[in-house]
Image (cartoon, rainbow, N blue to C red; front, side, top):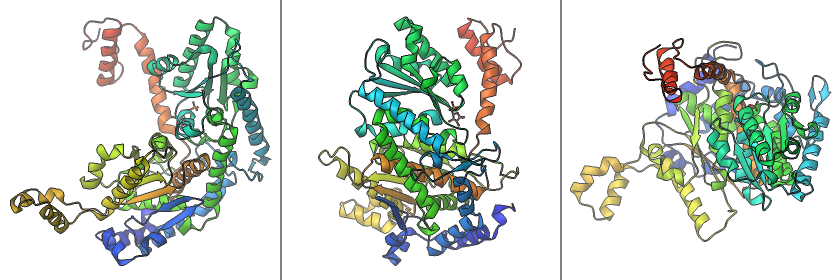
Length: 556
Ligand code: F6P
């Protein structure tokens, strides 16, 4: 592929950027009363308002030209049809098949994978119904009251964001916990809250080799066996989800209780697979299938809607606009919903593990910025923490604001206050406050001219800060499924534009190898001197306390 930044669509965008970079959204809104209707689109009851962006009709068309030039539609079709679009691992990328509710055949190497997908869904239904109904009992006859998912990355964040967001749909009396960190504190503090006879552990790991997960799984198993004094009881309290069925069996999980998925499901795209088992247990299989349905509807929208109405494509291209032309380094995720508080963490992995790449598909170093830093916090908390920087800082942070029209907890004025804050923030970010407006406002408050002169510069807001608002009727499983799938496809489209493989994560592997070496060093008595001086010094400082070695700066 030729250099993207020299391509016709990119060059046209750059020239256009130079023309419009100083125009203000305040004026664009004033000049065009139809701006909201022209720059918004919807799917079911999810509305995407992207009118508060620094775009004109021309910008929008040029961004879509870039999408066409990069053959986004072709790549999308190849992904959906099972081509090995994960080129560095030579794998198909078919999380969409896991939620293919139309059940049309999807072929991998000539084999229709839908029967396998459906068989695991059936297995999940049977198991979750037995647990939730109380038919499945612990080793001494107690009902399961706590689920502890042990996994990390995609084997943690996906099921966690859904369970947290869908609390109103959870079965009464059933609690869901998520343990991921290698820090024993995570496991220990969780185990303090559960009883062995009423707890079901789910060991979730695509590879079944991830160090943190296996460490936590072994410690949880030990805790359990120590307390109940019976190895055989493990079968009633430990199940596994993995592509590595053999390793799960070797760990001692009853083969009947191993839930399988496949290498064409990426870790951070796996919540739709058996990795969703904690979701299905916590919410029930019908709700899990509603989640799949919502995601499937977004898949169809992504596959069929024209680019100018296509939510994932629009979000992706706006992201490219800011990342590559306005030099925005980060992208904010601001859910105005307490239930969505884990969404920024989930999207961090989805986006940053997928598009945090420097080498393109052809093995060349890219000459443009790729994936942004994703961060955020639920509103209104963020307003009282970091929004100051959004309003008056020097760094542009284009952001997505997500808000339901109806609350799951319609208590007094709470939701009206929440919505008004969300809309006020995006409006303030867009409009800003002019010098004259700030002066008028202060005068009306009776502030003296002298005082106005001394502070007026601080009271002016530039505005022109872009945001998308994603507003939906209510946060239910179907809507959540659509929203999560929308972001998956957004990330995919950006990867296509940047010509990178969004489905590998070699960078993470390197740290794992080094950790193995340092772990060995930490176990040996005596000082270490074969790393760089900083790493040696830190290892030796830890040894100073752990082995009581006196002088950690001096090698022995
Ligand atoms: O962080 C790297 C990674 O491979 C993620 O992509 C993945 O979600 C996570 O580790 C956990 O992997 P596994 O499910 O194989 O334990």
